[in-house]
Length: 490
Ligand code: FRU
Image (cartoon, rainbow, N blue to C red; front, side, top):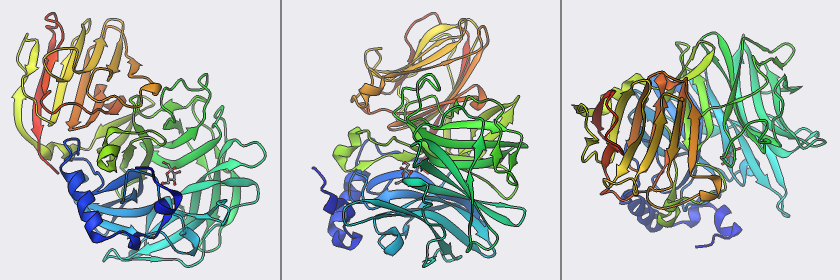
């Protein structure tokens, strides 16, 4: 069905309970619906928002349009957890439709302030002739999860940016508040990050664009996050429209990071260790990741598994996308590592030690599992997931630990989609070194953690649910070991 603008932006009250029930049932019966990832009850999910720890619980919200697989009037849906693994969906917490968020409560973040959680988000407003206006708004959430919006915008769009001005990350540094906001400069039409400062969350001072040594931020920066990881400052963001010589990426838009020893809030300077940014995820489908520092200082990250402007097979079923597992961030030897949180082990059911010297590793792996595999140095082969026993129908992980690479190929696994952005993704590895993979499969989601989280490759795929063999495509792979676990629903 083609969605008109009127349909996308009408008030939620125009949709009947019966319609929502029908959509939820349809999504629920989908064979592609993840069972241990946050996915929408109905309609579309995109960015994670307001990731935080408040009142003894973990909180994450997500951008939602609950009535179809399209980007329409966005609200925040609220999920809570005791362990970052089992999440409860509490429904819409921050609806759009007020004067300063009339056409969407767009992305933002959260900070615990006193005994409440402060949400800072972008209000998307369109004029009669559909010109955009972006407001940075606030809202308070109390311990009963009741959200009350601040009636006036915190920050209005400065004259020198275009209407692309959004996704505030609220930071608290030495009794001062800062908001880091994605922006597009009106003169240059280049991507920038704006910094605003406040001591009371009411009066905000424009500190200008963040001065940095990164080569190029494309034409717009979405979802900036500044995070402390093991005494380093990591800046995570989504630069749109980067030239390929800046960052060779096949994804429509990348999610990247840069590392520094310091963020100079006085001078508003981020001097990165390298002027080249790095892809956060080397797979196909990660975007708009959000990170925050927990009370004990640990850094956690959660991503949208989905990309803007791409059609996915579940659109046919009226729902779209999911969030990633929660990943803990670490800096090891100056590099950013992402590891699935340790509590993920709680979902493990049956453990199977992989058979020795076999081509077929697991005959019927099902749709929810974790596969841990170590391949020795000097192994060349092809690991098949979601296979019907052949290489013709399988998700292929081609590895060569002699030359040092891993290539993920989704060309032969189920329904085709987003083929114009390529069907392979490849990463380089240190030659002649063993390779460890920790792979999580949840129906249509696959997250591959490489060498203890040094690289992550995330993807969706849409295969027959009878295709459940895990095998090597050739007999020669001898030097390997590993475990397979079935995983429960969250
Ligand atoms: C990123 C994004 C954000 C915006 C939100 C709207 O995916 O475009 O920049 O706030 O989605 O849903």
